Length: 269
Ligand code: GLN
Image (cartoon, rainbow, N blue to C red; front, side):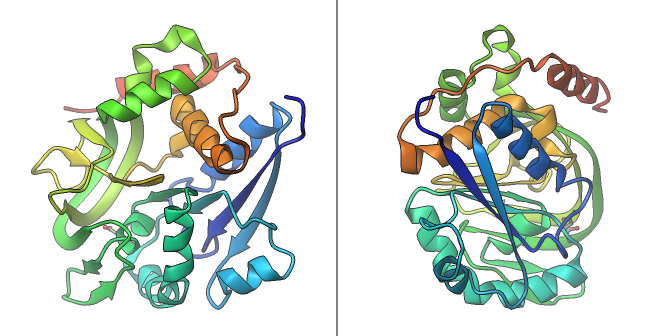
């Protein structure tokens, strides 16, 4: 790569929303970029921080390329859900402008229209995803294995530079632990179809949601170290907005694919 390139990551509420190794996704993104000579800058944003003020004072000149929002329990979701309302416009504009966002479980729920807890409290979301979540008596806890949505598979195959894992790049493996059941409005594209596990609600075999370059899912784990094809897809999409299509150099992902397979082998039908 001739010109030095950089990826600016905004980590939303890392102090409150970080369950089952979600932060490992950030480490993964940093490492995969650094190994390729791509600079990474991470900004932690939490309660009381204004996204727009931050960009004005010393934040990345063109705003963030990539937003990450991990999971948390109902108690944290109440605090974060309230604060997120003040950030909603900025965040939605960023997604309209082609930025990438990955959200997991509690973060995914807060980006929907609302989350109704088991005791009937409504935690208002920001409606980035046309979906809602209802707390249930079931705890959905297991390895979750999904087939990725068809168009995404096509894109990933074009982007992911390692060629000898064609078969594996069609799926994702992670670990779900939630009691909320998510229902997507009809027009919403799920991230994929459940092979083993519960996913959004255990009823319609959908898992996650996609809106433009924003992705929501129930895949903790951490997700990206075990799914290098998805990590590279997200990196590539996030760079595209400022640099156009960037050809990522291949990395030796043999250990990552072993981890991927080991997690699949542990799924329970
Ligand atoms: N409170 C949510 C649920 O149980 C989110 C949990 C999580 O982020 N792991 O549905």
